[in-house]
Image (tube, rainbow, N blue to C red; front, side):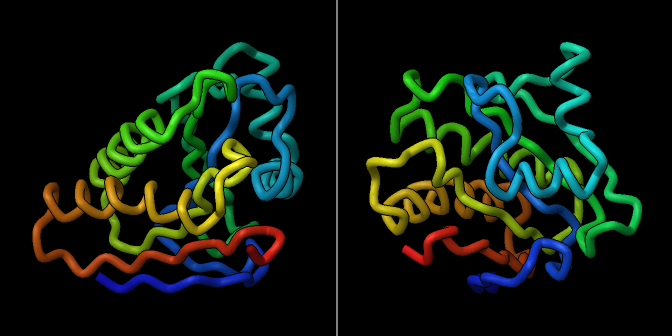
Length: 158
């Protein structure tokens, strides 16, 4: 399994699937998800307005960037409400996210760990906690598959 970190612009990151996270209690997409929402002409915001996806824990939305990004698909995973999040909940979500990736197929994944959801945690601790479950589930689901994981670095470099 190859793992690398990048601070490259979203539009330049090639992947089968780009994974981003959305908090239920954020009324509109923010951070990198907000940027993707803007690039995709409000696709995530429209799903929320129609009651189709609001960031509920474990809910997912799969978007097609239609050539606006190098990633072939964008998977948005709901985190639920920030007050309900814990490191245990994050670990469970990492497994569920990996299971969704396995179902979608492909081996090149770019993702931003849900830094925004854990503002009091050190970004490296958050990233490690997420990756522990995520990578274990990928390996369990497709042993020996040469996955390529691109981690989007913390927005503040920390």
